[in-house]
Amino acid sequence: MKTKAMTEGTPWKHILKFSLPVLAGSLLQQLYNTADTIIVGHYSGQDALSAVGTTGSFTFLFLAIAIGFSAGNGVVVAQHFGAGDKKAVRKNASTGILFLILLGAASTLLACITAGPAYKYLLDVDKSILGLTVTYFRWYALGLIFQYGYNIFSSILRAVGDSAATLYFLLISSVINIGLDLLFVGLFKWGVVGAAVATDISQAASFIAAYLYMTKKYPVFRFKLNEYIWDGSLVMKTVKVGLPISLQLIIVSFGLTFIQRAVNGFGKTMTASFTVGQRIEMYLNLPCNAFQTTLATYSGQNIGANKPERIKTGVRQTIIISLIMTLIISAFIWIFAEQLITLFSLSDKAAEYCLSHLRAVALINVVLSMYIPVFGVFQGANHSGLPTIVATCALGLRVLVTYLFRHSDIFGYTIIWWNGIFGFGTGFIITWSCYLGGVWKKNSRLSRDQPDQ
Image (cartoon, rainbow, N blue to C red; front, side):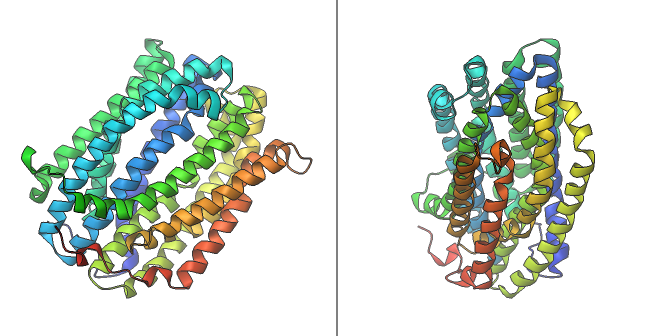
């Protein structure tokens, strides 16, 4: 393995070098999601835009499973990589790939079966767009196996310090997705089906590109078909680290589902506004999410190399960089909110809602930049359950205040975006209390200390 571990040298240089490709990749992903929304809204109308947007929380549920378990396998691989155990790196990667591919196939089946009742009863989608919503999601779900496969390949590459490669895969995916959106939705007029099929094909392309790159550049990851062996003990290592990460994201998904239900209760106009607001809000969260991924790998490698003292320095430097980046994005969104909204072909009333949404989150979401990256430390140190607890508290509080105040004189419908004050503030307090209290140091010996079977 040619990639250098992040256990020597200046922490912030390693962290920035590693995180910038992750950040750029996430930016590309958001750009093509945004382009997808713009194209659907422009060519298929606000109802189609609302239908695609209202699937967001449910699609995130399955993405949470993919990200969580692939990240769990990535942490295990990173720890063994930091320890210089090439054999364990290969074995855990092989089992992780098989596990995620099978999980992706199962998720496709589950998603198609549950789509109808989920959107009708759980999210209470407006009847006029229910058919469009279910149709889009079922077509989208056909590509989950590629999404899961891509995530495990990317996690393994990040585990050995190669974060730049994922940028190339996402660039390929983004170009294909936007091109096919214009073809299927704009030219062929396939509507939401065209948008879903374009996403499926682009995910398949990134899956193939990631696999070819990984196997060509890293001989250790060249597996013959009979080398993809199901090893229950190795699967449990991935599950032990990955399940809390998945649960954290699943809780976020369920929290967003209930918030989406509250949004839908205000009508299609609010649903369309919220769809656009969320798309733009995602850009605010890019730095903190990228640094969470980075600190998970950084912490895992340094714990694997028995150098936990480097983690504290890395955290301090990471938070400063994360905060600066988020403030710059917040300022941009605040200043150019009106111009950004005009790209999405919203009605005047929806645009009015969206402007209030964006101005609020440009202030509130800065708090995320100061604690979400620290989640990576707990994940890399085998304490990934703690971010799950924090996410539960934060989302639970956001949902609670949303339903308490949505019809009140204090907030009314604006609680849909101002709920972050309560949730993110709580998350900040719990996370930093646990970090400064040294929770991450306890029992943080890596999984390699447990013998492979």
